Amino acid sequence: MTTRRMLLTGALAAAFIATPAAAQDAGSRKLAVATTSIIADLARNVGGDRLEVRALVGPNGDAHVYSPTPGDAKELAAAAAVFVNGLGLEGWLTRLVAASGTKAPMIIVTKGITPLRMPDEEHPGKTVIDPHAWQSVADAKVYVANIRDGLDAADPAGTAVYDANAQAYLAKLDELEKEVRTAIGGIPADRRKIITTHDAFGYFGAAYGMSFIAPEGVSTEAEPSAKDVARIIRQIKKQKLPAVFLENVADPRLMEQIARETGAAIGGRVYSDALSEPSGPAGTYIDMMRHNVREFAKALGGRV
Ligand SMILES: [Zn+2]
Image 1 (tube, rainbow, N blue to C red):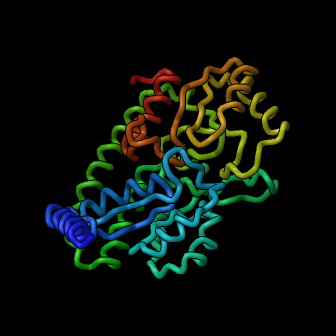
Image 2: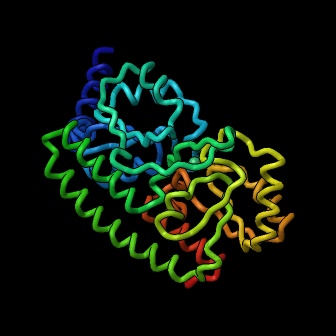
Image 3: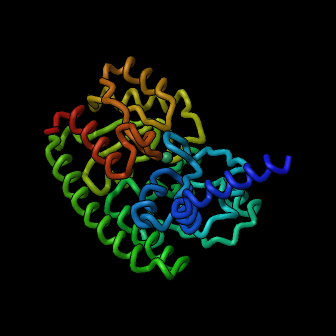
């Protein structure tokens, strides 16, 4: 017995001695939690090696209608910082934060962005705030600046790292923004019209001169009525809109029905509110924007 226990203890000790650097690294990285996969990717680019970032709503997940898990509350409780979109996206967050007892600072990454308002499908005559600001690269740069400032405050020892990472990543976003403008500029102006399942591309449209229509509003919470769908079908036929797009966070059947009834082509799958799996076509924010723009340009006769 004694010998066996000693052997086991020895083996355990050897295991620890063999991996001290790895164990230490994992231990010294701060944990941050982001509500969505898109915000998590932006935060990883700022946090670099100092930060482990987890997303509550993972790849292809729908942040509008998310149901938090007990594991989410534990992650929030352990987090050094929490990154939140705000603008009404995460209706489920307040209760989760209260349940978790977290003391982590809540960093609203849209702070300073002028919110767009959209007609409220549920309450005619009223408007509702559009939360999808990340679809404008200029606004994503504001997200990054807010993430950097939040990390500088939450972990002052890392300020130099966070500032340098943010600066390098912001330069990449500048390049991305030029690419997006060039690609959209190559689509004939009268064809810059897109139909998606839900109204997720308002900021994209406002920034790059494209119009989007959708049978669902700015949230996926309410199913579109038969009347909404009929209205969209009439609009597509009247304006001879060439393509409808599927979204990674939405059920494809509605768009497939609309495509059948209007003769519009299915322009491919675009990523609206969540990234793809890391190995997919939209595993990072930059890849997501490139992929979406390529799909739009391909379907609408732009240069790809
Ligand atoms: Zn959305």
